Image: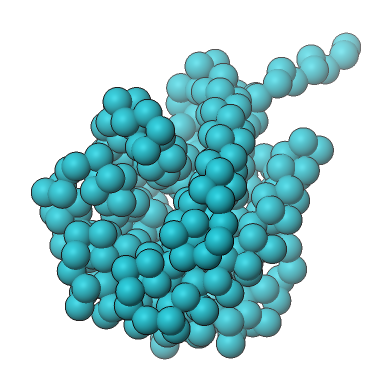
Length: 321
């Protein structure tokens, strides 16, 4: 008897979304670079347009899986790559809204609020999974930043669309949550070594510092922005120094975790340079943008190739219809 051929999208892995998330950040960084270097704004807009189409394709592919069996969402949230991927999917909605804000403000407003609604729903599902799942699922990981601090990703879009009050609440609320996660994670690093396959996830710790600094700068809180910039530079330097240790296990789908933090770091440095905080930020921002541009596309291509070849879902324990 012949085995039925699997349908397209029966095991669409959430691991496809972190590189998309990073690519959105790269497009926003290139748009920001137009205010610091002699770079046409169109460069960033072209990247954001292409990534938006890519993101929508990935969302449709995952939506087909969910439509066939809605229970796959809860199953994907039981594993770390699934939680990271679905979080990146939701946070990418905020970045899509950021891309739309200067071009189609009305649509940007709609997408921002859709992103907030989706994010709240995700957090409810994650918390429910923590309460009903095994104890090891409740361990604090860098992915917690994406789930619980990730609301800060909406901050720059909120400012661009005139929601300064929302951005302020998000800044201080998520800042407190990020501090708790950083503290707990530091204690874990001191007490025990991180398993080799999970080390790339440590890069996620950089992203909240960058986003918190970005939102503070956009709101005009220069002192707060510079404080987070200092923290971001320290974290970035630590990741660079420990890079051989972090990538010891070789390429894996979790390398998608490198993409958005790199873009967010470049974006923060460029925003500070654009607001006249010093030429040092211009140099660091330019270097960060070059590094992000060289790193993000190859990682994205390798992850998408793994998906196209059919092995990404199995490697990341993605739920199957």
